[in-house]
Each structure stands twice: as C-alpha cells, then as structure tokens.
Length: 123
Image (cartoon, rainbow, N blue to C red):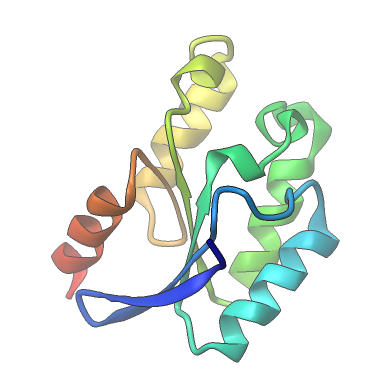
C-alpha cells in the first residue's frame, strides 16, 4: 500500500504505509517532508515500524534531529503505534512522549482513529 493523502477533520494528512522505507535519519525525514509538502499535507502520520531503534534512544539524538526537521518546516508528525515497549524501558523517553503529546507539533498516538479525533479537537 503506497503513502496517501487523507483529510482528517479538515487537515490534510500524509498517511505513510507501514511497509515503506525506514526513517533512520534527517535525510529520510526530509524526503517525507518533501513528499508531504508536494501533496499539500499539514501532518505526516508515520507508523512506528518505520522508525529505527535509534529514534527511541534519546541519547543518540536521532529523535531530536528528525523532530526538529518537521518543526523547521512546520509540518506536524504523528508517530502511530504502541510505544509502550520503549517508554517502559526509559523514563526519559516516557517524559518526552508525554510532553510531545501536550504540544502541537509531535504526537505519539495508537492509530489513525486517535489522530483523526485529536485533529478534530483542534478545529
């Protein structure tokens, strides 16, 4: 299934396919950002399976670099899937996820239904 654009409560979202290329670094994030902009997206919904383990090791700096790229280009990023195996193993990551979910740039959500509901709340 290829990546596609869908309207979630009036917000265009680039839905990334779970079987797509991994996003291990800033370069891959920029590719997603470019694809999102090219399709008119305001958010990118990225399945957790497309992120590498380095993303969840905050000390690596990978998460910060990827998230910063999305923030720079003012494109929201929703990481979809169960992050509990990662947050159970890291207090710092658990805090990062909690703080991110309070903001308006990066959300960690279980699925597209939760993203649709969250975007509907903001409109």
